[in-house]
Image (cartoon, rainbow, N blue to C red):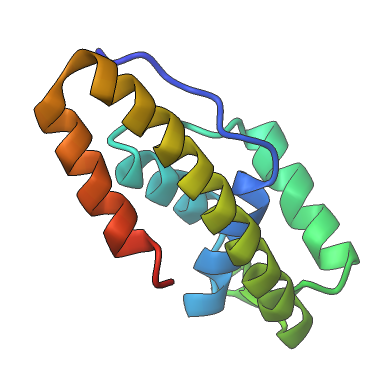
Length: 126
């Protein structure tokens, strides 16, 4: 089984806002989505996830609603604004990581270097 990883600080917070901006979600759905989207390499701990849901609600970034006997969360306008700011920061961070990967790939394998160059071209306009 592939090794799990720890995400950089702020990533789970931003993912929660992103999932909640699409439709009302609960903690279990968020955890499953993260695990699925990372092919099982990242399973956020319930403690981290529910702590952030509570914090985001208290900060006015999420609205809690009861639906079918369970708590569900949806992003507020303030939360969507926060998500847009985080998106910019995460994009910049991703481009920095790609620069490092490009450097490593150049030393290791020319074909990987070319692939990373293509990914960076795709990401740069965003």
